[in-house]
Length: 73
Image 1: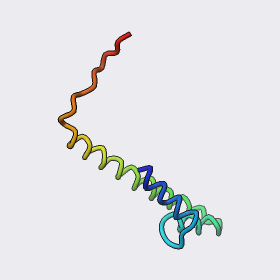
Image 2: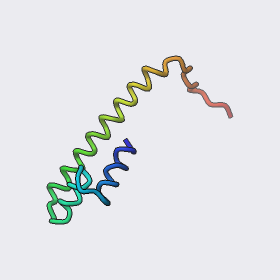
Image 3: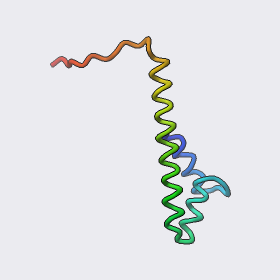
């Protein structure tokens, strides 16, 4: 998720294509709807990718023992 956000920020700062560029372009002409729609699209992608990575991680790390719920003092 953070890598995708980093890529979009890179596009925002110095690209001529991509979601970051579209957000920057919409911001430069005061298109509030365009800016927020770009941010919503980015949020949906990040949540979807994070969920997918979590599911794959759970599937591949079944061998790892579960952490104990008790703490020692």
